[in-house]
Amino acid sequence: MLFTINDVTKYLETIAPLNLQESYDNSGLLAGEPNTPVTGILLALDAVEEIVEEAIHHNCNLIITHHPIIFRGLKTLTGKNYVERTVIKAIRNHIGLYAIHTNLDNVLHNGVNERIANQINLQNQTILSPKTNNTEAGAGIIGTLQSPMNENEFLGILKNTMKTSCIKHTKFLNRPIHSVAICGGAGSFLIPNAINAGADAFITSDLKYHEFFDADNHLLLADIGHYESEQYTIDLLYDIIQQKMSTFALRKTELLTNPVRYLF
Image (cartoon, rainbow, N blue to C red; front, side, top):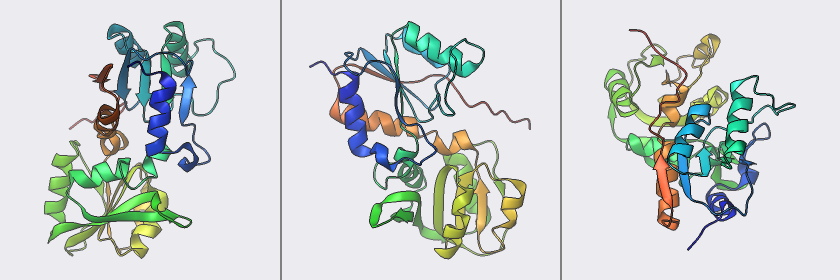
């Protein structure tokens, strides 16, 4: 059976409806013709030129990413920056570009935060900041560890599980970690929600200096890095699509698109 780009994207939108994306976001089909038959799909966190080249090499004519390559809008397509060069290369090679961003963040089941929570075996997962009248959708997740652990042990397990080189965190409060809140990507806006929900720790990324003060001795803040917090989204998308559609090549990128490097 042949599936079109539209078949794939509409299926994904049954998992993460576009109306759940934040107002600033740009999820959905960004380039490509919906009725094009899919020859193969490449999954990645970011759409950059190297990802398009990888798709060409593997005969994939649809790239599905978490982050939308067209985010702030395009007024020209002259190739003056990496965004324009990526879009031009995709269009020239008849490759569709689809992003599933904050709508995938904002679902409880089969969402970005659930996958992070599952990686650290978090139990009793619920939405941290539910959307109005919908406990199945909203920002962040909160749950409990199978058994409490001390802060150093918790961060050590988190570091290994999330494959991060380092974790920026607030000072230890010498209290056991049991209830844990999570927000993949930039989640500083949820610090008050995590505190009000009684979380012992809040895992997120992209925290600014002064935002660490916002913990105010209520919880342990852990910044694990943006890419690191969302890396398992690729596996999540692979599992979702493979369960429904298996008549074309489905590939996870072999490239590291994280633009951040660490020196130790």
